[in-house]
Amino acid sequence: MDDLLGDLQRRVANMVRRGVISDVNLAGPRPTCRVRLGNNVTDWLPLCQWGASQYQQDFHPAAAGDAVTVISEAGDLNNGRVFPGWNTDAVAIPSGDKNTHITRYEDGTEIRYDRKVHALTIALAQGGTYKIVGEGTLDGPVLITKNLTVAGNTMLQASLDVASNVTAKGEVLDAKGTMNQIRTTYNGHNHKGDSGGTTGTPNQSM
Image 1 (tube, rainbow, N blue to C red):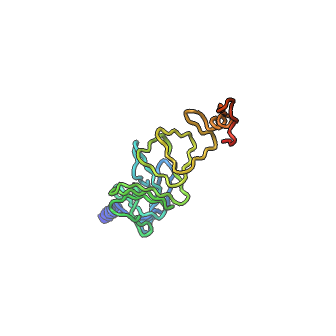
Image 2 (cartoon, rainbow, N blue to C red):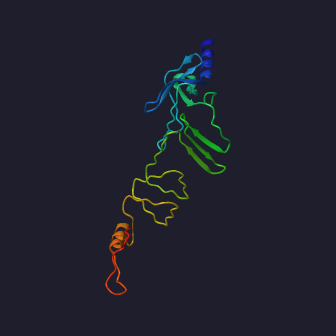
Image 3 (cartoon, helix red, strand yellow):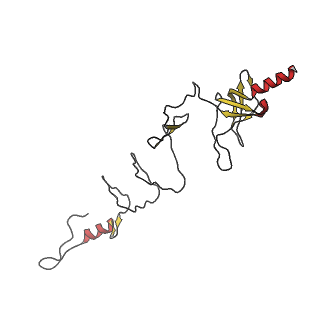
């Protein structure tokens, strides 16, 4: 009777346990980890992700030292599932308020959305880059504060207003012809003289 009672108490105590990750294996098809619970370390257990279905899969890698919760069916730690844990002194919440959703990465990159003012901010760490693959549309005013490089052809279907110089290493053309064609025509053109004959070509070339 005492053995049965002791086993029940142990199972109840092991149904929900809090600990820290001791080791982690992020290889597919599913990540696993071992968890330190007091003085004991579990066997390899599934490390649960925030979303795992046929329609959507999320991958949130964990690291040794992360706080987690182990939930075990029937209180048997061999049947445990590890769920990402809570904030600690070492992993504090990012600075924000009730209106802000924040995702912050170890290198300092941060995605922040303020639903009160409807503002999305993506701040990359120093030297960070981003790449968007696929066709798309920017629907709304866009401000670019630094250099813009376009590797492909550009088609403008509206007016172009330039506040500074326009420099071209190739031809510039409009509906009447290229700048080079206009220059050739101008440099060699002449006029009928007032007293007959023709004038000479311009004394200054374009």
